[in-house]
Image (cartoon, rainbow, N blue to C red; front, side, top):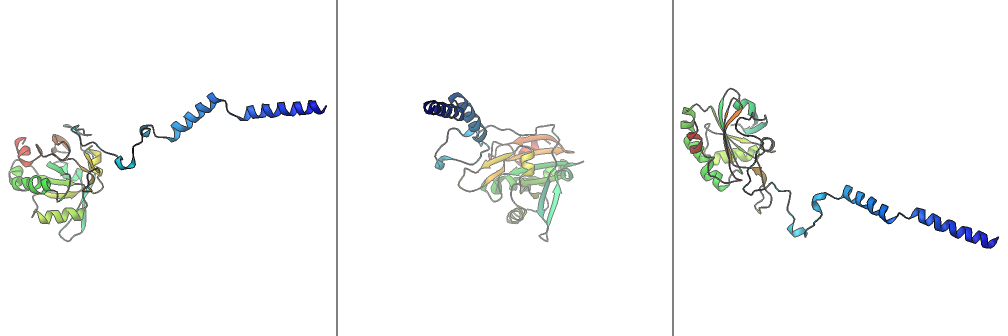
Length: 227
């Protein structure tokens, strides 16, 4: 009887162990399921931390945008400081509805190309542009309204060009014009691609979207040619 009991206990223990230990194939399936659930599929090949970069909107010569000629511009709210340094806002709709407007964007206030060429070009040609029926000329940048006011004063910009802040990048994202410069040591982060567009009653008639921050066909002279 003792031998039977010991044999029975051993058999029961063996059976219990076999039930509590996952079969290799089942364990692999479950482990794969767990791994695929918890591990992002895009980060299987890890690199040393020194080579990792923030999420990057490519600055390579692939130009994409959420808008094109014929698109109705999405609405968004931009801001600026008035003469009393009070924050004011204006919508894209207010700038473009029943109007002919030129909206141009720069990667950053106080940056060399923007300060030396892009904005000064529109200041110099503002009268000619408005003589051809343009009601609004506005510069848009992913900078805060205080920076845009200081930049406006440094360039001696009058009322001919509005200097508008898209501080949170809402309008820039809505039209697909993000430019990620996070991998640059200067610390610009995500800004706007350089562009110039002619908008009539809220609809894009001309869109000159540059490759990143290049300055080749988004200047005032280029917009005069299409009017």
